[in-house]
Every structure is written in C-alpha cells, then in structure tokens.
View (tube, rainbow, N blue to C red):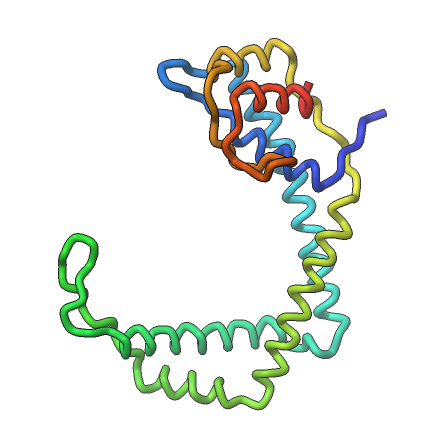
Length: 208
C-alpha cells in the first residue's frame, strides 16, 4: 500500500527539489542524478497542480452557489480596468519635468489615458455595486484561504524518493562546506540560507 503525504508537505518538498543545484562552482550534477531529481520534481509538481485545481473548483462552486458572487468575474475585470486606468492617470499627473532614470536619462511623461477611458473609469468608480463587489472580493479571498488551509491536510500518495546513490551524487556536486540559498524557508528558522550539510540531511529525511 502506497505511503501517504499531505498536500502541505508536497508543496514544501516540491520547492525543496527545485532548490537542488545542477551546477556548483566547477562541479556538475551527474546525468543520472539530475534525471532522478527532475522526474521526482515533476511528480510533486503534479500534486501541487492537483491541489490548485481542487481549490479552483471549490472557489468556482462557491461563486455559483452564493448570490453575492453573481457576475463576479465580469465585475472583477471591469473594476481591474478601472484601477489600471486610474493608475495611469496618477502616473501622468505626478510626473515632473526633469525626472531621470538610474542611467541619468530623461523620463518622458507617461501617456494620459484617452478621454473615453477616463470617462469609463469615472463611471465605474461611481457605480452603485462597486463597494459591494469589493466586500464580496474580500470575502472570496478569505474563503479561498480557508479552503487552502482546510485541504492542505488532505493526503495523496507519496512519490518514490531518491536512492542513496542519487543523494551521493548531489553531495558530490554541492559538497558539505559553506551554505546554499534555497527556494523554501527552513521549517524551524524561517531562513532561506542553509548550511549545505543541513540541506543534505533534509533531503535524506524527506526523500530517502
């Protein structure tokens, strides 16, 4: 019977695998080990994609069920357009002559949206359902967070891990001296800079 792993751990391990360097200084990960890491990473990526699809379906069902989310996607696009136009207006208005970029070149004044766009943004700003939409938007975002927290503990089959020979291949590539910057924070310290030995121990714990 296949061992199980939670979605939460699958996300963590997926990022951990993406942190394995294929080149470190003048050392390169051997082809067999690199292939094993890529294949295992792909399996965990499928699990994270499965989780995201599960959440997307749950959010979609919620929008279809609750009347306050009626035409939600259409309104979201409309009010996003409003915010984009207003941001362009603000950039145009706050520009001052003589502004320069990091290389010392003059920054041209940002273009002003068309009269039609400005009118459209004003109409959307004054629309009666705008405030209700933003309340619904905040509620939906919180509902999505709650769904993610709830389903993070759901279990899926744990992919087959790395062999000791493959872990040895990673060791030969990165060595044990010094530190390595990873794509996922340490579960205890919250830091991204780990000792190489600590990283290898974590790989062994998670995948061997």
